[in-house]
Length: 125
Image 1: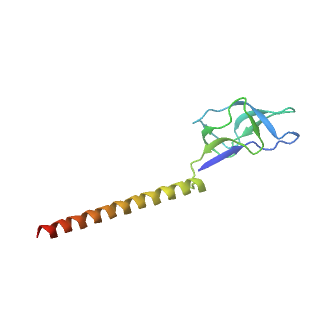
Image 2 (image 1 turned 30 degrees about the vertical axis):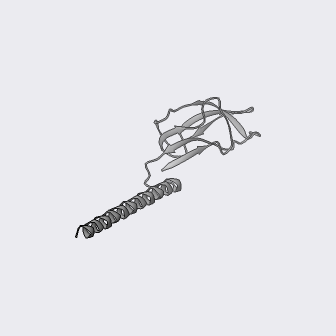
């Protein structure tokens, strides 16, 4: 399952954005829930954003020096849970539907070829 890491609201900070100072972990590294992921800097404070779950840091979306707003997605974690996110399920369903449509088209083509063969056989008689 994929989990988004968002910039949280920080107590004592009046602003709605922060700058990515540096990442403690790199992409593809395993992290534990509560482990520091990234250091953020605002005009008034410096703070760390921690991993909301244990898993693997799949992708860093906010690079060092980037300014992000509260609620912005900064990274994606991948957990070993069996539940897929809704987006992943939708993509899988769409792919399955496309495959079924292709199979139906192939079946229709086969039927058309069979009919053509029968017509040719009739003409030969």
